Amino acid sequence: MSNDGRVRWGILATGGIAAAFTADLVDLPDAEVVAVASRSEDSAKAFAERFGIPRAYGDWRALAEDADVDVDVVYVATPHAAHRVAAGMCLEAGRNVLCEKAFTLNAREAEELVALARERGRFLMEAMWMYCNPLVRRLAELVRDGAIGEVRTVQADFGLAGPFPPSHRLRDPAQGGGALLDLGVYPVSFAQLLLGEPSDVTGRAVLSDEGVDLQTGALLSWESGAIASVHCSIVGGTGTSASVTGSEGRIDIPSGFFFPDRFVLHRDGRDPRTFSADPADGPRNSMRHEAAEVMRALRAGETESPLVPLDGTLAVMRTLDAIRDRVGVRYPGEERLNEGSFA
Image (cartoon, rainbow, N blue to C red; front, side, top):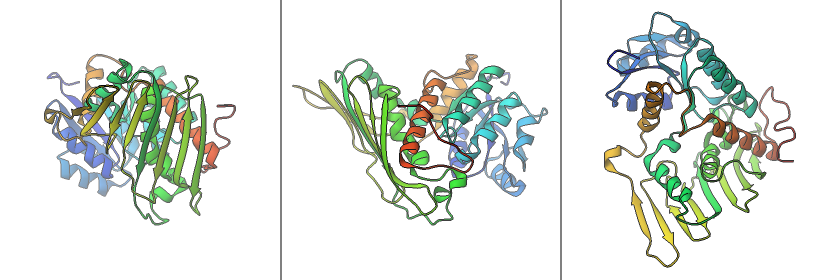
C-alpha cells in the first residue's frame, strides 16, 4: 500500500460489472485505480480513459506480472468461466484478489483457487457484495441473536425477464451460462448466510436448447429441520424478495434482498418493526462496502475476510454443484459433479 494508506487497485476485464465497481471505487477517497487489463487493448484503453486510469493492458498476464506497477489488489470481473484462469494468474504472480461471483464454474475450481491463495499467503475474497451490505449484516445479526427464534424456513428469488438470445453469454455453456450461476448464487448465498451448508439438496430446472438452465428451483434442507426454497430465472422477472421464518417470528425483505432498502421484523405479540438503510451508507446498490472490506482486511494484514470467508464460498459452490447435478447442467470439460456429496 502507498505511504498515505491508499489502496491501489487493478481491474481485470472491462464489462458492465467492472465499470460499476470502478465507479464506486472512484468515490472512495482511500482507493486508487492504477491499472486495467482486457483481452482487447482498445477496450482497455477506452476503459482507462473513461475512469482516468494511468495504465492499460491488452493482456491479462501483463497486469498480473508487471513488476513496474504497484497493485495492492486485483478485481477480477470476467465471466465466471474465466475466473479460475484469471484469478489464478494473479495469485501465482503474488497479487491479492477480489473475484466476482459465481466464484468459479464449480467447487473443484474454487478449491484450487483457495488452496493457491493459502499456499502463497495472498488475500482472496469472493465479491459477494450482499454479505458486506450494512442492512443485510444487520438482518443476519438479528437472526443470530435469536430475534425470530430458531430458523424454520428461508425463501428467496432472483429472476430477469429476458428474453436473452442464444448468442448471449447467459445462454452460452462455454461461458458458464444459465440462471443458477449468474442469479441463483444470490438466493443460495442468502440461505447459507443464515443456515450454513445444507445437508441435502433437490432441484428442478427448465433447460435451453444449448443445455443451460433457463429457470431453476431448489429445495435445501438442514438436519435442524430448516428448509430453504430458492428460485432463479432468465425468462421471467421476479420480485427479488426474501423471507426468513423462525419459531418466534419472521423477517420479510419486500424486494431487492441482496441490496435492500428495508426489511420488516415480525415477532409474535409485537408490532412489526421496519429497519431501513442508512442514507449515509450511500446508494443501496453500491459495491463500495465490499471494496471497503477488502481494503480494511489488507491494512490489517488479513488473507481472508470474516464477512465473506473462503470456507463459506466453498460451501456455496458445493451447493451450486449439487443443484446442477440434480438438474443435469454440465459445462464443457466437466465430469460428474459432487461425486458422493449429499448422498
